[in-house]
Each structure stands twice: as structure tokens, then as C-alpha cells.
Length: 532
Image 1 (cartoon, rainbow, N blue to C red):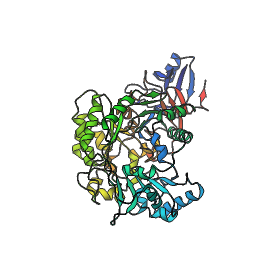
Image 2: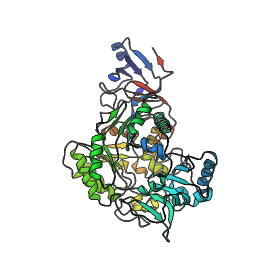
Image 3: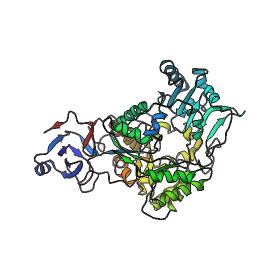
Image 4: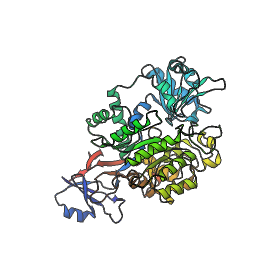
């Protein structure tokens, strides 16, 4: 079937290719140009008239966790809480209405809402004696109730095979705050979701992402062992709403070489609209949890080491993967962690494989120069600095880093000015996977609708650079086919009711999604479009 899409504005993001009409045959773009010419070339084609709308290449969220995230987002959404009273009220309402398998569960909680160090106190006050666990917004730490700690046998500090930790008070008693892998001491006791519930949850999650304009996502985990079955069952409900590039995760492990061999073998796995490609690694944790890797300790004396107790093991893993032709995507938050990863990648022999670093929350000029010289790609999340950080540096992240390091946060402008490939994303469920909010935050460095001062306004991107971060740069960062509208490319589009390059950023957050397509097949919208 041949279809012509007509829109008032088409941003092809392909130099020298423009027009207001796009012809599609069997899911591929065959022509782009003026309406009259395209209609003349395809006189019998079906026409989808988009009216006063703007078509862009299908948007890509370069960092999401949909497979693992469905377990992380059980219970009550606490992302809107700003005070301890907010937390208590939402937890009490949830516990009285919908207990989850006997547990009080929550997620998305900003550490700043505690107004002090996270602890079990609020959980114990709201529901004394109840098994409870809250996953904080960074998804690297959990706050558990005293009853949950008791059930898990957590009585004090423990030794782990990485930099995970049970936080204890001055007397050595657990506070309820569990960092990194220590989370599983409690979360491992929560009854698992049924397969049917996980299928429903995953589909709803992907549908909600598509509804904001996304057509694809880089999923940086593979979730449970039955991930393939889960994806196929979701696909059977009408197809995946997004194309997923899935990168399984490798962490510090006694059987590291076996884990590496396993993920190399997984690279051949694929299905309809999903494929395993690349590997996710982590060199450190988070600034908010005190598990990032900094040159010097944070203001609480924390964030002093790699998540890998021996960072040489990380370098060994990257070396094996690189030799096997597998692209890596490494979570690196602190300045020393990013520098170590950048040096490791720069030292690899050239073989055409390009790697990517995720987050880079605080970095130095030296690191940016190193990344530029090695051609390493970068993936960053603009909404992290607009949702969790304040311009006056009174937030937990800034206080822990101190003024100098906090001022080096989310240097998107400097990264682009040095010519790096910069992919943008949400890191869902850390922040909402809303393409419109990401495009806005990248330009304003301010939470949409917020009245506060922007965070690092000198690091703002232009509208075009922000759009490239969700299209051409996102695709290039993992070596995928170019994300542009041009003959030969997949007919994967996002259509807004307003122009992302010529609409005030704050207004663009209210943009409606007219249509999304994946290889010519409508996913969002299309039901009431004019056809002839």
C-alpha cells in the first residue's frame, strides 16, 4: 500500500530534504517534497491529511527501564510529595485502601521530601508493625519499615560483593535506608507480581510513553528471566507500542566471565519491535544516596568509591565486550566515575564499535575533552536537574556535592559545543517518560510550570538540539540507522499539533500528539484523520 502523509510542517532532520508531503510504500519512505509533486507521482495513493500539524522523525527515549520498572513502580506513586506530611498522608491513604499482598509499597519519592536523612520513622508511624518499603526516585535505594527489616534479618551493617550498604546510625542500628544491592534484602521478600499483571503493567507503561510522542526506547535492563515471554505476550495484545532496543545489565559478580558470555549470547535475541543490543554496566551509584564515585568525598564524607570494589574488573568486562563487538552503555554519575569510564573506553583499540556513557551528572572540562577525542557518545536526562535540583543549591544533590561540583551539573551545552553525540531521555521510572517535558527541560532548565530560577541556564540547548537528542543523536549513539525522514528510511514518525522548533518551550508541554507511526503502521492517533 502507498500512503502520502501531508502536514503543514515537516522537519526531516535530513540536510537537503524538505517539503510538506511524505510518500510511504510498505513501511519505508519513498519520497519527500512538495504536495503537488508527491501527489503527481503517486496519484492513486491513500492520503493522510494531518492539517496544521508538524511531523518529525519518530522520537526515541534513550534511557528507560520498562522491564525492570514494572516491579519498581508497585504501590503508591509518591513523586508529588514534597514534605514528610505529604509522605505520611499518601502512605496512610494507600494502606487503608489497597494493601499490596500484605505490603505497603511506594515509589518515586524524592529524597528531598524527607527534609532529613531517609529513615523508617515515617513508615513506622503511619503503619506500626507493617511490612513496608519505599523505592526512592533514584531507584538505587529503598526505605524499609522496622518490621520489614526484622523479617529480612537486617540488624546492622553488612558486607556485600560491591559498594552496596545497609545504612546504620551511630549505635550501629539500621535506619531503614538500604543502598544499591542491599535493597534486595527486603524487596526480595515482597511477593512477586503475577505474569498476567506484569503483562498488563508493561503494556500500560509503553502505551503511556507512546502517548507523549515516543516511538522507540533504549531499555537498559532486561528484567526477569522470562523477559522474552513477557514481550511476546504484550505484543500479542496488538503489538508493542514502542520499538525497544534492550541492553541486559552486568554488575560485579563472582562469575563475571560467565555473565559476560551470557549477555554476548543474548545479542542474537529479537522479536517483533524488540531486539537485544548492547550491554548496560554501572561504575557507581547516585549522589543522593552517597554511592557516586567522586574525586573527593561529598559533604557527608560519602561517594568515595566505585560500585565495583575492584574497578579493574569493570575494565576487564568492557574489554571483553568490545572485542566481541558489543556496545556498552555505562551508568556513571560522579566526576571520578565518569573520568574512569572515559579513560577505559578511550584506551580500547579501534574496531568501529562506539560506546556510550549514561548520566554524567557532574563532570570536568578534562572529561569532556577526553570524550570528544575518543568519540564516545553521551546520554543525559534534562528532567533530572529540573525535577530534583534547585537553582539555590538547597537540594540534597547540591548540598552533598558542594557549590563547585554542583555548578558542573548536566553540562549539555558544553557537551554539544565540543561536538559530542548527545542522546536525551527520561530514565523512567526515575522521571516521567514524557517527550514534551524532556524537550522543554532541555531548553529552559526549569520544571515545566515552575516559577523557580533555572538550574544552570548556561547549559540550555536550542530547540533543534533538543529535538536531535531524541532523534538523530539518540539513534547515532547506539549505531542505529539514521533517525530522519528521507527516502529509504523507515516511516516512523511523530506528529504534534504544534511545531517543537517554533513554539515557546513552556507552551510545548501542552502539545497534543496527532499521530505516531512505526514503519508506516499507526500507533497513536489516526482514527479520525482525513483520508482520500
